[in-house]
Image 1 (cartoon, rainbow, N blue to C red):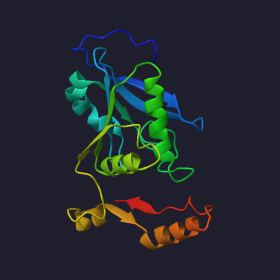
Image 2 (image 1 turned 30 degrees about the vertical axis):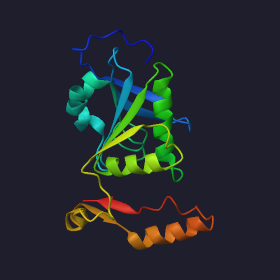
Image 3 (image 1 turned 120 degrees about the horizontal axis):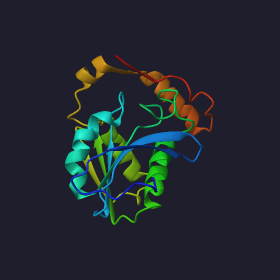
Length: 190
């Protein structure tokens, strides 16, 4: 990361980079630097894919700041296995680690999270949690918020299959400190 050459504003080469999360796993992100900007824009992908589909948007936003597109843990080029976290809140810790990693080489006046689909839901969760001071603004692109009145639950059910009873049971067990069943599958995709 430190060896990036200076680029002109017209240079839109996206760098592919890994960074170490706090548990030592190597997580992947795409990075489009803008040496003249003091803002960081982080694009967050949806749940069943990875960040590659956001590269065209990154190129459009590049004039406004450095653009980062992480692959969430278990997605794309980030550490397998797919869809697994060791604890509740690990994705939020991963995001905080990534932003801290990027801030080691450049001081940003503003960090903006732009989340698409479940990435939008994640951005809300991140901004409302223990890392709420890390990002200064959020932009949500068709966010997947299952309790929102605009959520197309019929379409979502055809695509994603949450095991609501199991989720409820796990939440109850977590509330009393039992977490050993947290690795049980609770969501499948069509």
